[in-house]
Image 1 (cartoon, one colour):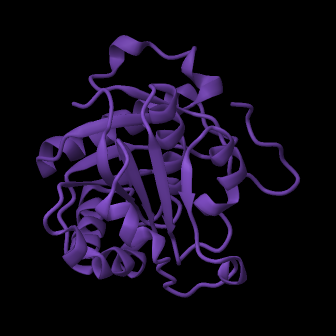
Image 2 (tube, one colour):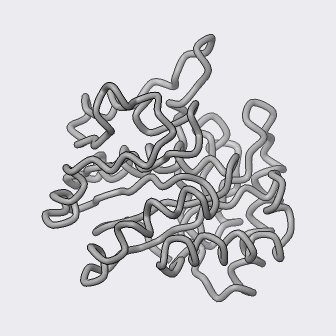
Length: 230
């Protein structure tokens, strides 16, 4: 169980897991704890909710954000910014890699596997049990297997992110926690965090959870909604 992350952390997960929002909020949490933080956008799968969409907020907090060149910002190509190599050689206290969903997106991480081979990397799988393919333990293990094969790295921990976007209830958080707790026991992977929308946090019994809670202030929202204040 980890109260704070450090070093190089790759955040992976299937489509709809919310792994990009989790990555952004991990970056903000690390910065609030006084760490020097950088985050790289390696998501070439989802064209709508990417770390790069929150780069203004993150940069304003003093977080280094590595994104593809401007002319490639809307591309779905595996654009690996040369700055990422420097980021790996000289990581900040917390260096986050926001990796695209499923095995397809994880291939980009696989392209960096040799560069990362001599560096400890925490690879964390974000799991939303209310999404297709991860509504069962077997499905989660299958997604894990696909990501590990594509990335050539082993997942080292789980982040539970049970949510139904604006329809999420406190009971959903408890149900999601029970699910990922069982997944942790079966897989042997530690449960690092439970991600919880900030507005629900005060309504939870903190004693119910055996791992830290990660408050999530949504930054990746549709154009007609306003991001949560930080």
